[in-house]
Length: 136
Image 1 (spheres, rainbow, N blue to C red):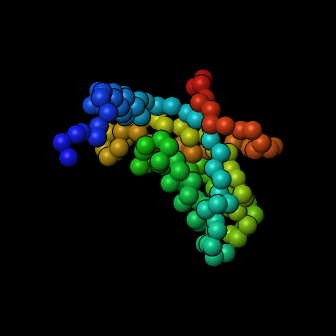
Image 2 (cartoon, one colour):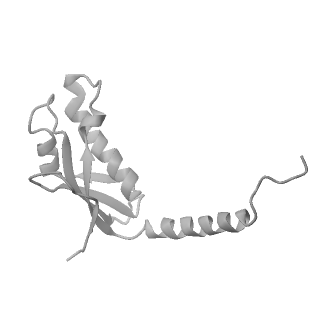
């Protein structure tokens, strides 16, 4: 087994990927606002009725944490009301949200950034994609 299985230049490509990952990690620390659609229905499969709305809130929290790379996620009261609008059992199938990564004003906070999740009312979810919102 004297031959190497790596293609020539694999080390250089790997180094490029590492530097791109560092750049994206640095970019993850900037305040930014995005509009996303969360498909809640696929997370509600095999969930008992009385746990559906609380699970939906948790799913939104997990989604925001994963997309915005922050542990501190704050859900707006209007979004919470929308998730609970049909009762505990009948959670809306999809929800359009605005994810805003912001700087934490508290000096004693463990995290420098937090994510604010707000509801964006839409007529239809057809053709919607994730969009970066320009801050006014």
